[in-house]
Length: 165
Image (cartoon, rainbow, N blue to C red):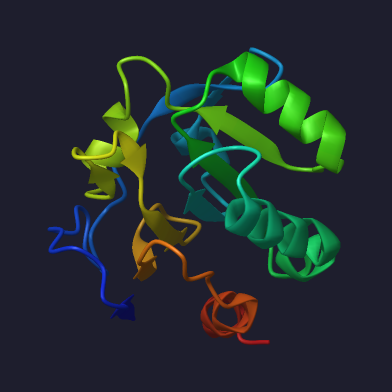
């Protein structure tokens, strides 16, 4: 399932049904996190513009508050922004996030570019979500425009279609 809500014209790479590009980024503790290390689990990759911004904080806090729904679907959440690991550490500590915040800091936005959700004009990631199955295939994509939060219910539907729940 692919959904785009008035987002800028962005070529989705990858599209639903295609393998997710592998990547390795540092988390907010400075530890390397590689997407392919999660084979055997579903992964929800959540690109967001910036730490400490209002809508982003609301979205990530909603995930934090409903993390058990992801875990019950055998899913790991990886949240990605162009912020540095230092900013992300402060953000994670302030908000009590129980999932990895990944720094797509340098080269600036490289992973967001691979996934087709980097806005060159503003230098930030768009609100893009990719749900990747246990074999590494993209099963769901949604991109929301600036100012519009994503819907957690859609994540749950997409994950339930993978797990049969």
